[in-house]
Amino acid sequence: MPWRSLEQLVFDNTYARLPEAFYAKPAPTPFASTPVVVAFNTDAALLIDLDHQEASRPEFAQLFGGSLLLPGMEPLAMLYAGHQFGVYVPQLGDGRAILLGEVVNERGERWDLHLKGAGRTPFSRDGDGRSVLRSAIREYLCCIALQGLGIPTTQALCVIGSDDPVYREQVETGAMVLRMAPSHVRFGTFEVFYYRRQYEHLKVLADYVIGLHFPHLAGLPDRYERWFNEVVERTATLIAQWQAVGWAHGVLNTDNMSILGLTLDYGPFGFMDDYDPGFICNHSDINGRYAFDQQPAIGLWNLGCLAQALTPLVAKEALKMSLDHYHRRFQQEYLRLMRAKLGLVEEQPGDQSLLDDFLHLLHESHVDYTIAFRTLGSLFSAEGEGHDALRDLFIHRERFDDWAVRYRDRLRSERSRDDERHRRMNRINPKYVLRNYLAQLAIEKARQKDCSEVDRLAAVLRSPYDDQPGMEAYAAPPPNWGKHLVVSCSS
Ligand code: AMP
Ligand code: MG
Picture 1 (tube, rainbow, N blue to C red):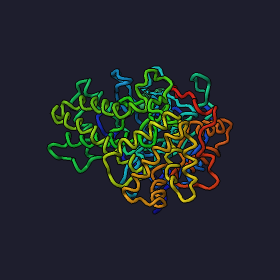
Picture 2: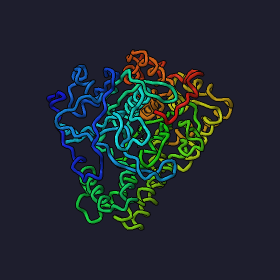
Picture 3: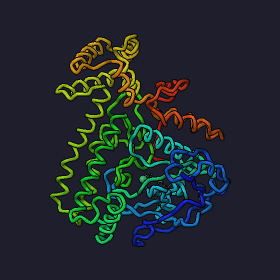
Picture 4: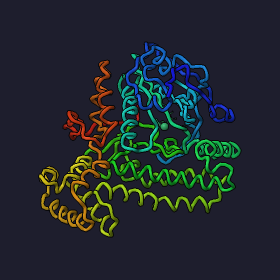
């Protein structure tokens, strides 16, 4: 594979060839101060065949700090609308992100280069078009974390920092994160044309998405309904994966829902520490609309909004049938994952209650979700360490003992071998997740111009299922100060 320099990247800007109503064409606004590379993700560079040594060229920081464009780039801000906290907002659009262009790699795969924090666009409303270092690092790290866990997500290539002041609750510094995805089209991209009654555009957009990203459906007479059905499936599967790792998005508005079923738009997201189904990671979400246990239902609600927007293209009955399928698909995937997290291979009738009772015990005793499942793998191991380590986490130890007896019987019923089960469980129960406090420590160092902790944490998160010698501290539960960090929408 010949690695490419920045100048050798190949662009094919399909979105820029769509009707002009689909976007505006602002250029990025560079920082006033010198841009510096805060973080660079070699795995994401591989996706676009980019030579990783390119990150040390001054042009790299200029390019992804918004002060340089490459030949072939055609910057644009995508138009979209969306339901925010249940209310339709007729016009949103990329208010602080700019699609620089679409790179096509050697294998013919295309990747949007989307620069977040690149300055004001015609869709910025009252915003300043900027992102702060804190949120850029959080997005960067969480993309790597979810990718490492095997959960579909946008990718982050790099974070570029600056000394430019950006005003949030406090004065912070501006940063840009270069985000990549095969497409950044959202549910809200369809909604805007539906509510404007621009059905021709709606059709053009649907055919565009199908042609590039669902090519097996292109040209079929029933392509729109089959495509919607696939979006339902992908969304249900994605959310089941979030639930299984204990992750909450925080702002599941329809403008943050990827048409490809990717995790998109990282804001006040959070991995749960102590298991709490009502976990709200977004401090501004007072009513808990986007609480952890609401996500599956919100996924369906958002798909309902997309279905409404597609009514000019697909019969209502067909849309309804796909929506009806959501719950089953979600449940099937969620139970498959949770069964695997318990180390169960066979499906048996009592599995759901075995799971529910375990989760109930975790909740009642405020047990760390990630640690509990990871430790469960070593339960009944020859040394007996796993049992005591896990048992000690519970307030009512005798209740845990009762559950453990049921669990052991259930494992015996399928002749489970403890050592083999332990290995299997370690491939699905991560040891390392992006806990808020870990991100916070990396951010604080980066603010002092020491970016080494961002790199170290990213390296740990790339292999979340491996026991990484010397990195045990990253698997520890949060210290007291790190338990209830406030994360709001202001990023
Ligand atoms: P988000 O909550 O990040 O998904 O953003 C919702 C909408 O607000 C999107 O249209 C964003 O582009 C826009 N937005 C968020 N923050 C800013 C900002 N600082 N400047 C301009 N637009 C913003
Ligand atoms: Mg958004």
